[in-house]
Image 1: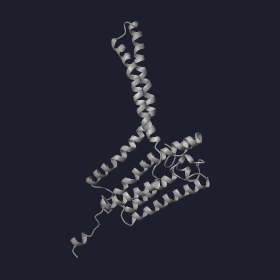
Image 2 (image 1 turned 60 degrees about the vertical axis):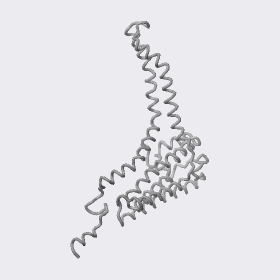
Image 3 (image 1 turned 45 degrees about the horizontal axis):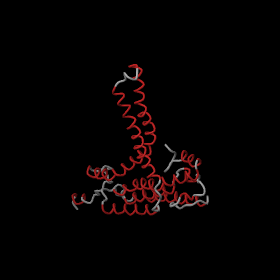
Amino acid sequence: MSKRSAGSHAPTHFASAGAGWLLPARVRLVMAFLLAPALALDFAHATVCRSSGLLTHLLPRVDAFPASAHDLSRKVVGGEQAMFPGINAMRRASRIFIPLFHSTIGATHTHIVQGISSMKPRIPPPVLMLAAAVIMWVLHRRFPLAVWVARPWNQSGSVVAAIGVAIGVAAVVRMHQAHTTTSPMDPGKASSLVTDGVFRISRNPIYLGMALLLTGWAIWLGSASPWIIPPLFVILITAVQIIPEEQALDQRFGEPYRAYQKRVARWIGRPV
């Protein structure tokens, strides 16, 4: 066999020696385009969650500015009749537009926050996880893009998936021991607040286990495109399941649950 024919059988995937983990520009462009919705959703969620404090900080200062300018002009010029015309006009406009600004921005922000927090769980999380796994398989079969984890290293995904299953099972067992509901469709029926066991490392160990299952599945598939789905699953399950659960548990248990939120992060570890 000639050297040319022997070299033609060399592996050409991106995990081979010499290619490293680098991706060509075209693949990186496709990945960036596909990941843009996830990044946009994450940014929007963070913006909504933090806008309340920002508005509370800014709006009183906007409202106070015309009054401060009015007082300053009286001291400098020396009388109501000698005030600058621009200051008078600004004060008259502020009586109309500042309350309108308060009501419009406040109502819009309240509507967004209530829209997120008042959503009730409608689809069981296991169904969402299975749907995500199917989409990952379709992406792997139709649009693999590149090989990120080659055989036999892709089999390490089973270890990650096994850890996810162990965490989820441990959470369900602990909830049964505490005689509280494990149904994700009506978290308001929880009879006790579980904060020990795996709940010491995550407030949502069952959903953490599902995310690890999808991560292990992505490693097992080995190609690049399935990795789009696990981050989207985390964002989706947070919006449609975890936030309504947090609202229900806060109403059900009050201060003990809020103290638990300060000790343990939503997904894993301690709050930042």
